[in-house]
Image 1: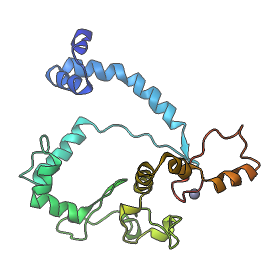
Image 2: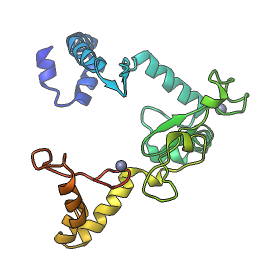
Image 3: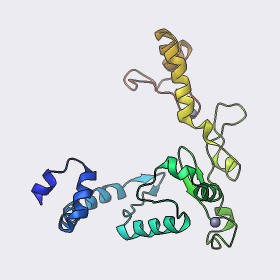
Image 4: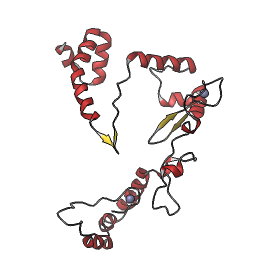
Amino acid sequence: MENLLKRCGSMAEIRKAGEKNSELAEAWTTSVAPVLDTVAARYSRLKLKVEPITIMDAVTDAEEDAVMQVITTLFPAINPATVTKQQADKDPAFTEWVQQHCRRCQYLFQIRKCDNTECCSVPILLPERMIWLPDPMPDASGDHYLTLDEVMGTDTDDTHRPSTQQSHKHKQATTATTAACVDFFMSEALEKQQKETELFTAQHARAVVSCLECSKP
Ligand SMILES: [Zn+2]
Ligand SMILES: [Zn+2]
């Protein structure tokens, strides 16, 4: 087994070898199981805003096969094992289905049942939970984001996501002089303001980062 693994240089190669040799696949699963358990146990102790992190099991081969089966049934022209995004986007059945059931943006990929009962079964979720999760949208001032409650249920797009704002600023910074670049991170007025803030002492701060949401330090 170990010699077999030694010949594999990547996870993809191990998978390929496992397809040919079921003993290898089994040995691999058994040997990584304790590691997976340790990692899962470590993560299960984490909390995000008081809520504990939920650890989910990886998708099983059977579940993956079931999804592949559905794709083949829905889109006969698509081979899910080899299809590329470009090919899928050219398939009218696929694009139409995606348009009716999915929303893709930089942060999230969402799938929802549509209203057509001939296409999808009646949703189990309450109607108020069947809405699309919104993207971050700026308020009237443009300095802050609207709260989740304010954007929930409204039509949004992801052009205002923090990462686009930052790359925009970065672009400005790189085309300007180095001095202006420094200025972007810490203007003189800002520096003065920080000096006045008691907590903001040299011992406490080694670097200043700007808030992605309101671009304040
Ligand atoms: Zn549907
Ligand atoms: Zn902020």
